[in-house]
Amino acid sequence: MMDWNGIVQAILSPGPQVVVSALIMILGFIFGMKASRAILSGLYLGVGFVGMTMAINALVAAVSPAAKALATNTGINLPTVDFGWTGAAAITWAWPLAFVFFAVEIGVNVIMLLTKTTDTINADMWNVWGIALTAYMVYSFTGNYVWAFVAGAIQVAIMLKLGDMWRDEIHDMLGYPGVTTTHIEAFTAIIMWPINRLMDFIPVFNTQWDAKALKKKIGILSEPVVMGFIIGLILALAGRYSVGNALNLAVTTGAIMAIFPVMAKFFMDSLTPFGTTMSNFMKKRFKNRDFVIGLDWPILGQSTELWVTMVILIPVSIIYAAILPGNTILPFAGVINYSLGVGGLLLTGGNLLRMVVLGVIYEPLFLYGASYFSNVFTDLAKSTKAIQVPAGSQVSWSSIEAPDLRYLMATAFQGHWIQIVLLIMLIALFWLVYRSFKKNPIPAQRYKKAASKEATATEDTTAQAKA
View 1: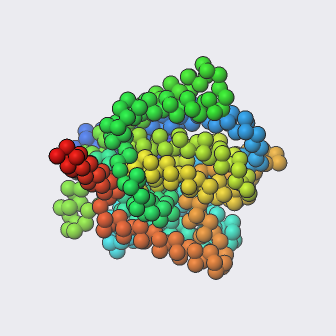
View 2: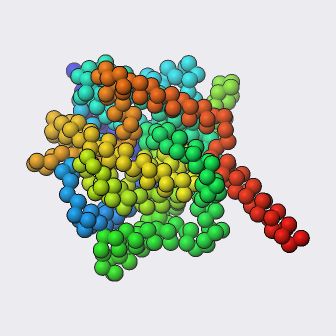
View 3: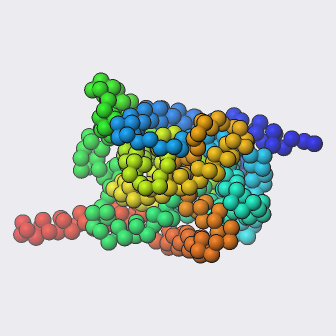
């Protein structure tokens, strides 16, 4: 009998930079790109992913010891070991049924394309493990494989609609035509939305707080390298580093912050010609349809606001871990919370003030989610033997993606009526946010208009005073 699991694992083993790059090349040929342009688009995308991954790993390696020192100095001692997304991915891929969710992903995508309920073609096959993880969580709670596959299918549908929802936002912010992100990390924006709407009624949140606007207000302090230096220095001093080591971390953090936009340029070189070609191809063959390709979240990496927010939230997560009753995990491998950064960025259009405030408000959800699912992660790790669980400890993921959705699906499918109602309410909220993004101007444009009106009002007041 053919070992399909082994075949899939062999295909995926080179990593997303190879798998996704190859898919982009193949799609480029299908959409009629010249061979040279298709190859370059694929290779530049690979370079972007490799460069972004190297920068992310360097950032994690630089700030994790500082975060650990901060935790040590505050006397935190928690029983659950944080193994981050890499540990979660490793044990999920080791689950024998994980590879089956490629069929679920592709099947749901095809059905939704044919029924015109999505215009997103998801090429982010690497992150199928996130769908399989949700399914395993549901199975571990219900003991029912049917509910596990239903949960996986629901997540796929949500991811595709997220792709539809963010496409204009990504084009406006980053200039990428014909692409979007389908990563479930972005689902955090849904639960952030009510608080973000309340912020619409508070004037300070309706001014421009992106990097470009800050540059006009605070000059050099808004440069990524300077912001990274300052944040790194504060984190190091909070961890009681020596002056020399603190300066070393500050320079390193500043350098990495400066590297992110440079690495992201390769995404632009890859995705701009690919997106344009794909869009033209589809418009000629499918009337009234405008398809986009769904990719992994690092395509958002040129956003300075994304990285500044996530690094600022590192000490916040440590403090929460120390004071939250019932929390059992100390953020370490997952100390950089991509869900808060990605969700906040897309929801607010890069409004840095909103992103940081929303991150502070919603960080506890992830710690509690990680604590709640620690038994699930530990059982899966022990059963697959993909990683070693320390004796007397549990393992989990401190920045687990979509903890609210995963918790409600796992418990609702057990037949708990309160969780069933809450799950329905969460999906209804998702639909409300989706419709809101389809009807209203995208956030970045809205805040620019608000800032423009404020500037005009200020100029009018000044003119009247002079008169």
